Amino acid sequence: MSGGWRLTLRERPPLPIEVGALNPERLADVTQTELERLPLALGRRSVPLAELMKVEGEPGGSLVFAGEGCERLDGVGRGLASGLIFVEGDAGHDTAAGQTAGQVQIAGSVRDHAATGMRGGVLEIGGHAGAFLGAPPPGERLGLRGGLVTVGGSVGERAGDRMRRGMIFVAGDAGPACGARMVAGTIAVAGRLGPLPGLRMRRGTLIAAGASAGTPDTFAETGRADLTIFRLLARRLGAAAPWIAPLLTAAPLRRVAGDLAVDGKGEILLPEL
Amino acid sequence: MIVNGVAIQDSFAEAFGMRATRLILTADSAAWARIAAKNLTGFATSVIGCGCEAGIERLVPPEETPDGRPGVAVLIFAVNSAELAKQVLARVGQSVLTAPGSACYSGLDAPETIPLGKSLRFFGDGFQTSKQILGRRYWRVPVMDGEFVVEDSVGMVRGVGGGNLLVLGESRAEVLAATERAVAAIRELPNVILPFPGGIVRSGSKIGSRYKGLIASTNDAYCPTLKGMTASRLEDAIGSVLEIVIDGLTQEDVAAAMRAGIAALCAVGAAGGVRRIDAGNYGGKLGPFQFHLRELAP
Image (cartoon, rainbow over all chains, first blue to last red; front, top):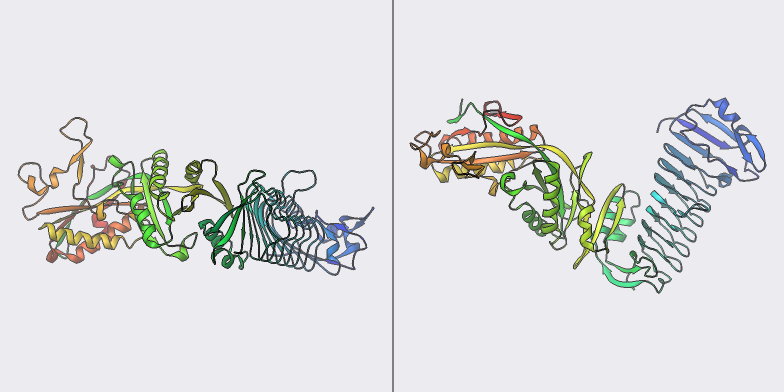
C-alpha cells in the first residue's frame, strides 16, 4: 500500500468525533490544505480537521490515525470499499460499520457495534471489542453479511447477533449470547463462551475451545464431530487466525445442533466434557 | 525420418475442442481417494459411448488439497458444457458421494463454471447446509458416516481431446511393453489424461461401418490379421499395433504429452521391437488441432 495520509490527534478530544467520512478512497484527490479544512463534527460544533489533528503525508492507499485519544474516534472505516486504515491505538464505536472491502486494522481495542452491517473486507482488532460486534445496524434485520473479523482479545455480549455470512475469530473469550439469532456464518472463539451461546440461531457454526457456561436447552447433542468441513476451514483460514487450525483438527469436538426452537440447522462445537 | 531404428511417419494426430474440468477428490486415506477416483473415471474411455472421457491426472499430497487430506486430481472431458455438467453430476453423485469419507472440490479456477454441489445438495433432503469460505461455497450433505463436503460449482475450460499415437511393432508383447513405457512417460506430465484402460487402446476405430446404425468400427487398415484382405497400412514385419489417446487442458499440453511419448518409444527403438510411430487423423477435415509427429520427434 504505497503512500497515504497520517492524521495525529493534537490532544485527547473532549467529545467523540465521527470520522466515517475519512478513508483512503475519499481522500485520494484532496490536497493537504483541503484536508486540513475538512469540517468535522465535535458535539454541536463543526470544526476544521486541522484544529483536531495534525495532517502529514499525501494521497495514497492508506490512512493512519495516531495520537492520544483515538478511542474517541467513532466510525473508523465506516463503509470502507478499498485501501487500508490503521489506528495506532484504540478506536471508538461503529468501527468498520458497513465496510464492503479493504482492510481496517486497530492496534488496540474498539468499543461497541464494530463491524455492524459489514459486508466484506477484513477488520483486525488487536485488543478487545465491545458489545454487538458484527450485529445488525439499528433498524436492520441482519448483522455481518460478509468479510473476516479477527479479535486479539475478548468480545462483549451478543457478538455475531443475526450475522448472515462471514467469519468472526476471537482469540479471547466471548460474552453472553454470542452468535444469538445467527442466520449463517462462522464464529470461532479460542477461549470460553458466555451464557446462552447461539440462542435462537437458525444456521451457522459457533466453535469454542474453552469450556462453556452451557448451551441452551433447545440444542440437541449429536456426539463427537470429526467432520471434513472443519479441516477445510482450518486449511483455508489458518493464515488469518493461526490458533484455529489446531482447534479444529485436534481431538474431535463435541457438537450440539440447534437452535431447535427455530430452524435448527446451526451447530455449536465445544471441547469434550 | 528414422530415430533409433523407429520410422516416424509423416503424419499428424487430429484433435478436437472439448470442455474440461478438474476435480480434486479427497478422503481419509490415499487408498480411499483412489477408489473414489477410479470409480468416477471408470467407463469414461470415449465420448462416443461413455458421454465423457476421464482419467486420473495425479495423486495430490495432503499439503496441496483443500482440506489437508490425501487427494486425487481427475480430469473430465466432454463434447459440450451441458454434457460435461451432466456427466460430472452423475459420476460424482454415484461414485464419490457414495465413497466413505470422501469430499469433492473444484481443481480449476476459471471464469466459467458448472454446477456440482448446487445440484447434489438436494440429496440432503432439506438437512443440507452450506458454508462460504473466502468467497467459495461448500455444501455439507449429511450422510451415514458424517458429512459429504462438495464445492458448489467447479471451474470449466476449453480443452483438447483426441491427441494420439499409434505404435507399430513386431510382436504383441514388444509393442505392449514399449507402449507401457510411453504411457509412463506421459503420466509424468500435468494437465493430461490417457482415458483408455491403462492408457492404451487396442481397438482403434474408423468412422462408420458396413452395418447400419454403427457410427464407428474397427480400424481395419491397422489390423494385422487383415493384411491382404483390406487396404492395409501395415508392412509385413508389423504384427501388432497399439494406440495412446491423449486429452489435455491445452494444445501445448497435448503436444508435450505426444512429444514425451514419442521420445520414450524412440528410446525403446527397433531393438525393442518398435518399427514405426503413426497417428490417427481424418485428413485434417474434422478437427481444428493437428499435431505433426515429425515436429514432435526428438
